[in-house]
Image (cartoon, rainbow, N blue to C red; front, side, top):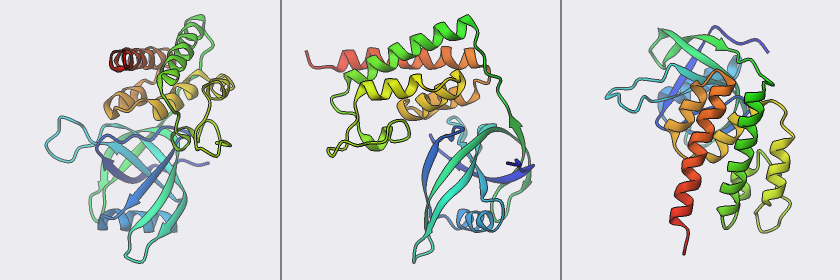
Length: 224
């Protein structure tokens, strides 16, 4: 698939789009309605960029996710519900358009996978932390983990062992880290750190740091 050299940019607080992730969106602002309509008439692509937390005006983080509109439903009032599939990380370049919506030049970012011993050790630590965190949950919601394990349970929950088996079936450390971050990290700033971790070993180290904090917090909050 050809990556465009420019695309519309939707700036959202605490929101990130990882390669391979599915992001449901509700489009209601007039500028983004226009962006979606023009995207659907063209290559069906636009970017999701997280708003910089410390900025007082609209300002996107420079590393964003380029997505492809997989499905879109136009409502009677002009709003839309859609699902965006993450394609790749991109670096936002110069602004090439501001009206009716923002467009930036794009630089696709390719990350090289690794099978180094360090990455293998970090990945095993990730598996351990994810399993600990999942087993602390009283119930694993199927809607959250659907990208990982299709739900066959009529009660709408999934099993930890099924989740871990699915994770271990993903051979690429970087892609697996992206999926775990998109599903299990609740904090948008932490997810953005993972998105900006272009080196796979660094990505795993950051992911493990955040997961360790999640496990510690869950233990402290667990009923005695």
